[in-house]
Structure formats: C-alpha cells, structure tokens
Length: 188
Image 1 (tube, rainbow, N blue to C red):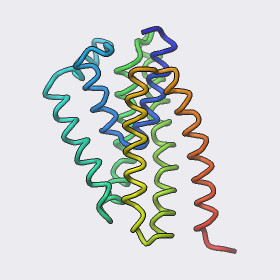
Image 2 (cartoon, rainbow, N blue to C red; image 1 turned 90 degrees about the vertical axis):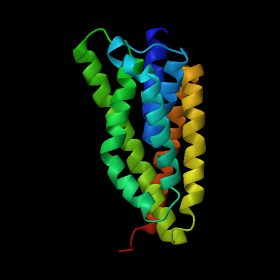
Image 3 (cartoon, helix red, strand yellow; image 1 turned 180 degrees about the horizontal axis):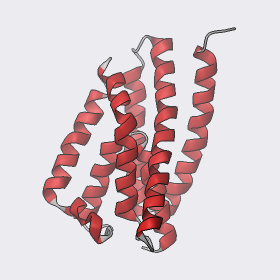
C-alpha cells in the first residue's frame, strides 16, 4: 500500500473510531488477520487470533450497550479516553512512518480526530435525548453502527474513497451538531 493510501486509511479509520472505537479496532484486526493489509511490525499483534476475537467480543458489547438507555451515556463518557487511544492504535497499525517521531505525531492527530468526531456524535446524542426523551437514541445508534461498519469496510478496500467520505461525513456531522446544539440550548 502506498503512503497516500496508508494516510487515507488511517484518517478514515480514526474517523470511524470516533463513532465506534472498538468496532474499528476489530475491523482492522480481522483485515490484518486475513492479510488484507500488513501493519508495521510493532502492531503485528493485531493479526493474532486471540486479539481479533477479544476485539470482536468487546466490539459487540460496544454495539449492544449503546442501545440501552443510561448505559449509552455512560459508555459515551468512558469513550472520551477509549476513542483517542483506539484511533492512535489504528494509525500505528496502518501507517508505515519514516520515523518514530512522525508516527507519534500522526497517532496524536488520529486521536484528536477521533475525539472531535466523538464530541460531535455526543452532541447529536444529547440532542436526541433532549428532544425524544431518549427513545430515539437506539435509532441513532443503529445509524451510527451502520455508518461505522460501512466506513471500516470501505477504508480497508478503498482507502482514498473512504477518506473522501470521512471528510464529507465530518463536515456534515459538524453542521448537524451545530444545528442540534442551537435547538436544545436554552434561549437567552
């Protein structure tokens, strides 16, 4: 995979991690396990079957827990730390950087990207909670799951296209989050 594809893959995956962190890691572990791409040797542990199955199990828990009222908000709070960490691992597992310093910088940027996406998603989730009393949250969660799974799949097989879609998603997400914030904030 050429450098542009590696960076595109990393960006698309960190954007997905901002929505579903462990699901993105599980998707990469599956792809690496089945030789769809090869991580740098420091991240070869992603290909181990035990790691893959653990990530798949935790990813399934992540998906199902997000459908349960109150648990979903707790999960979003905990993921303030998990999503940037997962994104950093995703960058490390997809980019063959020229130096450790460059890789660390890219991992930090990936973590910040995931954190920004998480903030926008959490804003939309908060707006859903306020406007529907939480009843709409499982529907929002299914949309998030579908988008995350699709973007992980596209990222692995068409990284440049996935990065372009991730940029479009990010812009739309920011616009939706701003609109949701304006609707639910108290009038002055």
